[in-house]
Amino acid sequence: MAYVATRGGEKAIQRAEQLYRALNGAFDADFVRAIERHMPYLMDRVMGEGSLYAPEMAALALAQAGGDLYEAVLLLRAYRSTLPRLAYAEPVDDEALLAVRRVSAAFKDIPGGQILGPTLDYSHRILTTQVLDNGHEASRPEPEAAEKPAPTNYPSVSGWHRLTGLMTRMEEHEPPDPAELPDVTREPIVFPASREHRLQSISRADTGGILALGYAGMRGYGLTHPTVNEVKLAYADVRLRHPITGAVFSAGRIRVTHTEVVSTSADGLELGFAATMGWNEVKTIAAAMLDMEMSKPEPHPAHTEEFVLYHTEPVEASGFCIHFKLPHYVTFNSALDSIRRVRSRREGGNRLQQMIQTAVKEKAS
Image 1 (tube, rainbow, N blue to C red):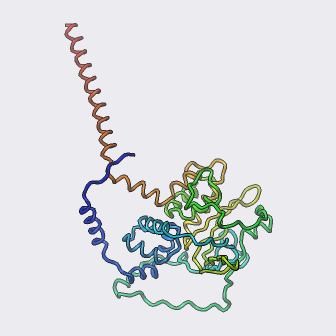
Image 2 (cartoon, rainbow, N blue to C red; image 1 turned 90 degrees about the horizontal axis):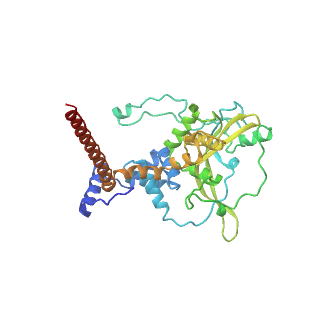
Image 3 (tube, one colour; image 1 turned 180 degrees about the vertical axis):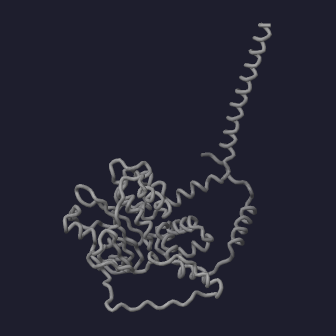
């Protein structure tokens, strides 16, 4: 696709950016901290799609982009590309996650029990308009302390399935060396994609794109209609190995979402999996369904691996769409020239046809 550079001069470009900033308003460190404090789920989405867990930088990207999510993700990824890689974290054990919410739609009773945790799933969706009238939200009662605190770690539901013979047991193997795992941020995807590349791609994919394709599959355009086996909102320790002593230590905790869906088959339960940085249940549910769908021998065309992984990549997809507003004078004028040539030939042919018909009539008379 050919296009020529925009020619407006450096001064015009600077003024265009100044107008953009003026319309969005100024922001400062306090505003950035307010975004970080009051919009945690938006922050989680930006960090997940930006492949960088840095709440302060994600809030800054949102403020700088005026709330444009795709621009914020692009800013965060660009910033990420400037950072050195100092170490590789150890693999995270699902059962070692510090869970604050853990529910299953497949079974009423699961090992460890269901933990509703922080959610609006069962709440009325009513705007608190009193904030606009009174200037502040009505006070809310503090959560009551439980008589018996819930455990922080829970056994894997899919592990329970494997123990009971409902799901194929996993082969025993040594944990992989994190430094040797394929990295989608440094290597291009080739198809069929490796398992690591697939899970990394859907982890940082566009939430809306994943939801649209997942929803299409759930409505009947796919081959599966799975059941949520487990959704878990948790904190994961970022465990590093000391370069001198070799001891493993925690460098901090990040919010993560872990989701499994299952589908029944003649051989037992089939498993779809997705996980992402931050708390984003709807994305991981749809992504786990797509993980299962992409593994089918003949999935719906919109659920093939190449289609899903390419078309849910937020920076590439938004960038290609936005590039259409750049000057395309050469290709567009070339298309207009083709239209003019076709019309000229058509009009010439019509005139020739009229001349022939006129000559035939004169000869006949």
